[in-house]
Image (cartoon, rainbow, N blue to C red; front, side, top):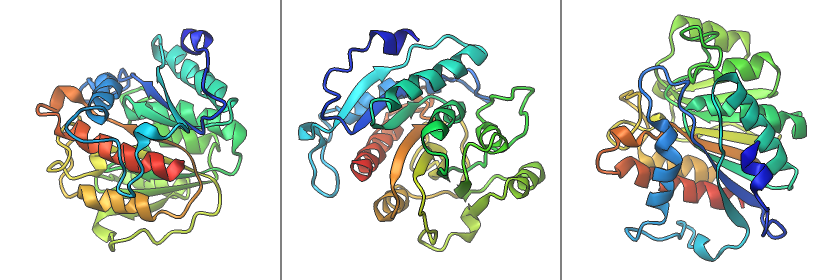
Length: 276
């Protein structure tokens, strides 16, 4: 655990939210590049193109309750999965909420594994074009197409709500039935999320939940998704205690003009203020 062993944690006395990058994409199934996502997102966040204020007019640059602790330093394979869990668990010991920047979606399983130790009745709200419920995609149980199968089979969450799904196949539909997943398919979207969240919520936001017109810089383009405004509205109107979150699958190698990184930075700011 070289990253957190060297981290001094100075400033944690006032910190309620830690932002951490997890540059892992070796579990991607179609193309790599998501490992570059954390730094690309940060560059957009701090660019002079915009500012650090949220739509509620809170200037995050002057908000001392959050801290960017940098990127995890990971090895590879199953060891990297273990390292993520260990490092997130160490951060949670600082009594902070954690917002992770991916990286591909495989990072959510080891993060939630750490969270489950602290929040035994966790609800996951998952915004994604894909259900990521494959039992064993491409003979890789840690594939970015499988994290929620790993989470639910290990009973790391009490409830899983998936929103924006529009690429589900029969195998994943059967997996959803097996794990009693609440799926709000994109074709059934009615303009707002009519779900109650009484338990602590972990929110996982895959950028491909957005239509490719709004977020082309992802590895898997799936037409027919949300607009940026719709996802912002979901975040702003969500009535829940969000104890942890991730934003995943930003792929700078496909984000030629940096537009998707700017969208991700916008969503990051709105999610941060929701968690603070």
